[in-house]
Image (cartoon, rainbow over all chains, first blue to last red; front, side, top):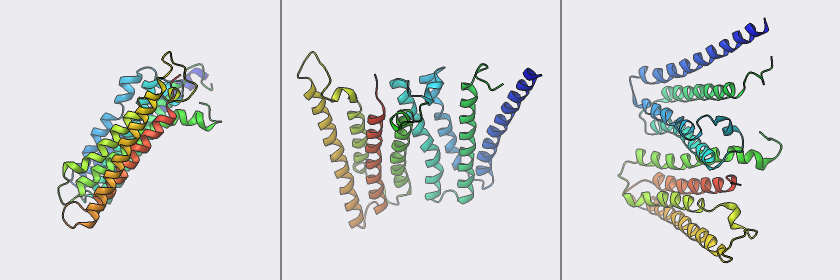
Length: 136
Length: 142
C-alpha cells in the first residue's frame, strides 16, 4: 500500500508540474493573441537561452547549483542563469516602456515567467531528492 | 546548504545575483536605445563596453592570490597582480567618468539623445561594475 501510494503521489506531482508548464505556455500565447501583437514572442528566445548554461556546463551535476562546493564552471553557470532571468523580465518591460504592448500583455508575460520559474524550481527540487531520502 | 552564516549563503547565491545585476545593467541600456527618439551614436556605447571589460579584468585575478599570505616562487610577482587590479580600476573609473560626461551632455543639449539615455548609461556602468565586484567577492576557488 505504501509503495503504490508513493507512486500515486509522484504521478500526481508530475501531473501538477505539467499543468504548471502548460499554464505558462497558455499565458504566453494569450499575451500575444488577445491583442494580436506578437512582439512579446521575443521572450521565448530568452526562455530558450535560460536552460542552456545548466545543460552545457553542469550536465548531471545540477545539485551543485544549490550548494557552494562547485568550481568555476558552476559559478559561471549561476552568473549566466541570473543574467538570463533578468532578460526574461526586461524584454516585456522594455516593450511596455516603448509603448509597443499594454499593461495587460505585460502582466500576462510576467505571470507566465513566474509560473515557469515555479515549475523549474519545483522540477529541480523533485530531481534532487531520490528514493532513499524520501519521507516515506 | 549551510544557511547559518552569511558567507556560505553568499557563496551559493552570489554568482546568480551578480549575473542578474549584470543583466539589469545591460537591459537598462537596451531600453534607452530602443526608446530613444534620436539615434544613439556608437560613442555612447563605449562606457558600457569598457565597464564590462573592466569587470572581466578584475575577475581574472583570484581573490586568494591578491593577499599577502600568497606564496610564490618568484617572490616579487605580487606587484603584477596589484598592477593588473590597478589597471582594471583605471578602466572602470574611465568608463564611469565617460558615462557621467555623456549624461551631462545629453541633459544640457536639446539635440541628440534625451536625458534618459545618459541616465541609463550611468546606471549601466554602475550595475555592471557592481556585478563584477559581487562575482569577485563571492566566487572563490580552493
